[in-house]
Length: 280
Length: 304
Ligand SMILES: Nc1ncnc2c1ncn2[C@@H]1O[C@H](COP(=O)(O)OP(=O)(O)O)[C@@H](O)[C@H]1O
Ligand SMILES: [Mg+2]
Image (tube, rainbow over all chains, first blue to last red; front, side, top):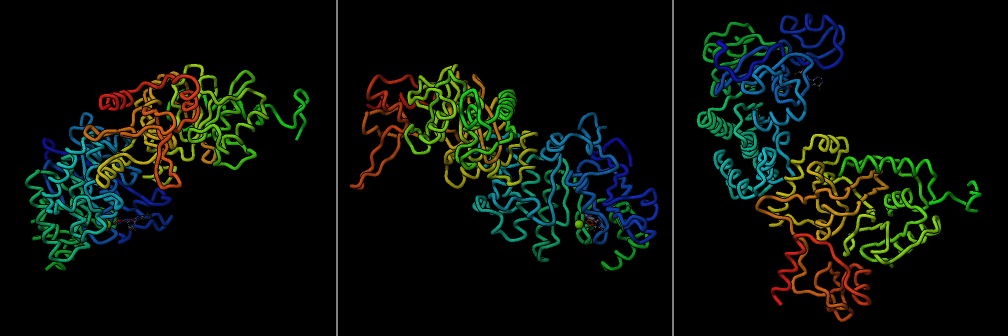
């Protein structure tokens, strides 16, 4: 990977739950087929994660349930605190500031301006006591837009581009279908035009037909906005449809990474081969 | 209880012991130093239940001296049962002068109103506050609201104003409109009408707030900016009372109460009882000047 054009650089990102010993990282991982330290019982959610994301690129993270995919994006979106590792964002403070260690206020700034997150469960990303428009308004207000008219205009535009009927903007997402809730979540996440978007199993809870439509919409949005994405899924067909490059995770570690097409055609790691064969 | 020899009383001067009064004064100093910031304090036991004006009473009793003149109003009235009982209590424990006349008072304890008459530099207004946390409606955990204040993260508050506009076409909520103090902390002004809110800003007097049940004190020092939260295109407004006037005095520029007669008719009277008395018996006291009131005056008298 060249260093000329990058957006996000992640190095040695590690998250461990519970008390760990010096051997915890050596005695966990795919070799042991476990993410639990045999000495202390600590859980290694993810460890030694390195990767670089390019502007406008879509990176897939695939792996079985519990392999640490959500932990990885939650760390980068500051939902979780990282005990180790660094992440730098191009264009933020000389490009070399570890965003995992900046103040809460700075983290909120980054969440509002530089990245967006779409969670598997819409309740994690939306406040169901507020209207759909209000949820989007929250992002716009935090970016300093205090004009109700322009907030509503922007919210309408966003809902339209994610194919949510604009007349329903003042309803709470509670009454929406699962697919529509995800669309509102996406509208909110991209409200301030962030260069980076995290999508964690966004179609997992949806009907197959709805899934296809939401994936289509995400692909169109990605092309229109040229927004970089990290797409987390345990479903290789989602990865195949959306991503350029893929990281395969197992027991909290990266076991393989490369171009998505290559990984699907010629998987190197035994675990990836298993995943791919189960897709066919 | 130890008998206090100097005054031959069964209790300390101003009821609360000196150390605790000192603690409250120290917390008040902190509150004045950080306008709009809620300072935790001891909220000592009183012979009335917490939540019945104890916060205001704590402040009054920790500040009051023999040369003070004390006034207390409850929803604008000096004569309500609550006001009378608390006045008697303060009087009995301090022997200080009490008054109904706003201009004569040095300490004014209040619930739900600011006086209609402008307050001066030598006066202190003390609010009884039921809920000091303006963010409680959008965040129920104290830990979270404290973080939100610390980081000036008021997005949820703003969304709730946006939501109120979406639902009701207006951002005018009930009493206790949220304000931003000194460009920093969002503060609950206690349940006063919007009519009174502009008078918090750049005033001559000191405003102190006490919430006994929630154990919090806060302050708006003299000449401090207090701004109601509003959007660029959806603005804060005071109550208008359009075309209405006081049944007794004919007054049009004052906060009016609505009264229901036995004949089913509604009439309006000036809410501030001292202001009404002054108009009836002497002359009209000098009122606060603020741009909302100026607008209201222009609107009222251009029409007539
Ligand atoms: N709060 C927690 N305490 C302990 N272990 C946790 C906690 N949250 C997640 N884990 C563990 O971390 C591992 C990675 O979880 P996660 O990132 O959610 O995986 P994925 O998204 O790939 O399914 C799992 O083994 C999970 O059980
Ligand atoms: Mg997950």
